[in-house]
Amino acid sequence: MLFHVTMDVRIPHDADPAKIDRLKAEEKARAQDLQRQGIWRHLWRVAGRYSNVSVFDVADAQTLHDLLSTLPLFPYMDVQVTALCRHPSSIHEDDR
Ligand SMILES: O=C(O)C[C@H]1C=CC(=O)O1
Image 1 (tube, protein in one colour):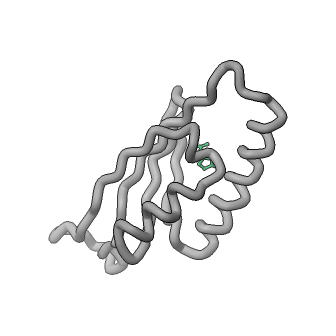
Image 2: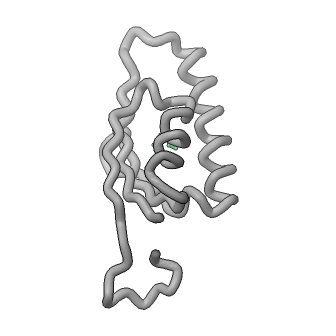
């Protein structure tokens, strides 16, 4: 199943910079690993905001929740999820 996910990252101003740098590095490694596996299909920065829009390809909503909630930056994210299904006019056979 495909899910559109928006992640708004909100780092508290009083957060420990060293801890945040470590979490960002861990997040990057995790995100790149999931992209290589084809699970995190799209990852886009929202221009002008510390936010991304992403498309995930996972078995179901529980799998997506387990994945998102274990991201290193998850405690600092507001996450919105929209389930996607195939558009009848899509020319992309892997849209499902
Ligand atoms: O920067 C972000 O949008 C938050 C998060 C998502 C992927 C990643 O590397 O960090």
